[in-house]
Length: 332
Ligand SMILES: [Zn+2]
Image (tube, rainbow, N blue to C red; front, side, top):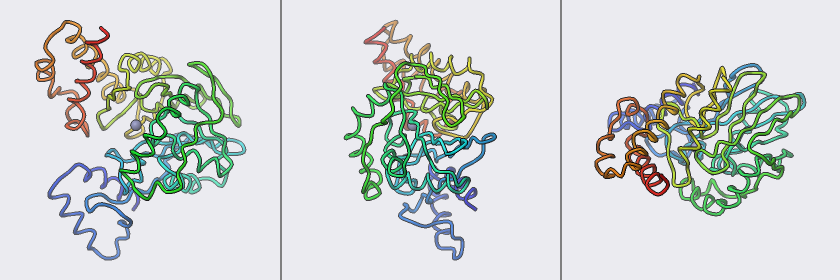
């Protein structure tokens, strides 16, 4: 049932008219038990559920749309590895409230306590659940560059998340990771689990990916998006992202848990993320470098066939090109 609810939710998030009427009908249908809580009429409440990727490695795949009360700001992917004595959680959620939802999803799979939280990045939904897990006894870890950005963006993110989820932010504290690893590439062993932790600085400065060499699985953080278009923010770097994507390929992961979208492989990540970084750099960035007019460049690439089927395309593509053009104009 939960699975059905989520699949349906993904589909209807961005559909209009008919979907809205169908959801209203379902809301009125007695006994379905799928729809509860403070959701907008068009959006079912998202309930995080762990899916096994391989062995002790699990992913929690969030919905693709914007932050909302119905998804508790968990519109991103999370994951965890069950170690010898405890659970290593990758990213902690958007608030104390949503962290507790992630915790429940972990507890549905294992009785072991969450003893470590690793933050792959500094965007709100990757780390604002830190204090909740610290309160449960977990140790918070990040690369030092990630922690620096967390510190810098904390108050703005608390305020921003408040606008999306309101009272669900009550009791949330922004707690920066306590254990900070220096360097752009760190190899660790936690509770018998091997990890390679690599800086990407793709979406936010100090963003990272975590590779599990024993399992051939990479949690990419916001380096990779599938099923939906990735977003380029003012603080993103498509050049660093492209370089990091090459490092991801060199790791040759068998499975990829992207920052957003379903658990996937390198081929889909290449088509929907790697190729888009290349498009932005080689088409849009190059035009800026050649001092071509921005309006004409953006118009010429308004609907690239390779990408316009992706969710959130209409909302993001033009702004993405705009940011890359401006960036390459200022730093050719
Ligand atoms: Zn994200």
